[in-house]
Length: 220
Image (tube, rainbow, N blue to C red):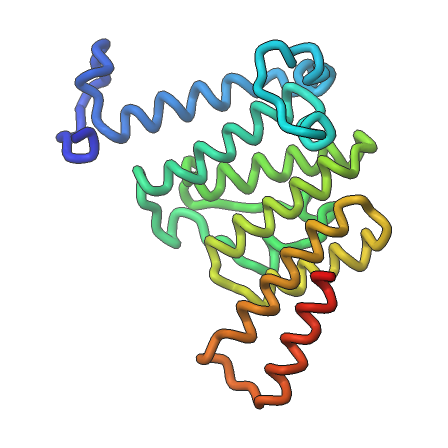
């Protein structure tokens, strides 16, 4: 019902009358306000708030601070808000060659959007800040996790499976002994299998068999 409401000229006090854009704008402001004081949040261990959270096993390694938790929640919102507020390529042209850059280069890359309110642009900027933070925090669990989530986001937005595969291969090469190697390897194996199963890609039977073997070897 909300999606069908007529766009409001002025924001009303009664949220029950708000249209989609008003809801999205307000929630956007709240998410961004929640992480405005990033330096304070980055120093707030998530363990201080565990009584309020439904924690998963080893979750503190991947969301070590309040900043991590709130940033990932904001990313999740912006990722979904694209369904409420469809955006065009003109709003923000997400180029795989930029968005799949290694973490150190990605964190400092100058992304420019015609529409800075673009949900995709907001997600990229949040990943830049999050990855930049963990470049210096020493928490490689959170860094690799952020990279993997970033890669998945960019792949889903660009549909560039080959660039995604290359990004995973590069990450695996730079993290050969990291405890998250299994997560990277699984994502890479799934991608190889997907590419191999794509009948639109020209490949010989031998190439497809070799690709399957490579996927199984990585997954082991």
